Length: 201
Image (cartoon, rainbow, N blue to C red):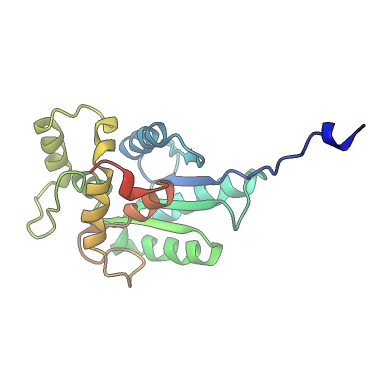
């Protein structure tokens, strides 16, 4: 066959997969499902969900992430990313957070820790309350969403740049998790967003 009729073989680009294990069974899962639907781009987002029988501590979340990574051979270390999404709150005192962080670093996984909880990351979509933290960050988050007439997390997706800017402002760039109120979830979201500056505030 003449060379001019030969079909050129294209180079297949390996699509990056981002695997996240979340501590919570509801809010975190629903948020990242909304984020996955909103972004819908070249990255594949896999959510390792927590079940009632699972240990909700940071170490339990790390073990679930580790199990997901090793049970599925389609993941490519060095190309794909593996994230643990947990809260500081009570687990810091129990030592589980430090233990999980150490294991994540050794395994080459990444961490998105919120202090005190994931609800602060959700509040960052509206404002930065860290100078005068409300007594209940969850109640305050629900109040802000009701006030803005946002009924589910898909309504927060147009505020991603605002959330990332507020969270970034609380990060000193030195600690593996926020020592003061803050959230490193912005680092995970940045890894999913192709061009953050092009997104709505």
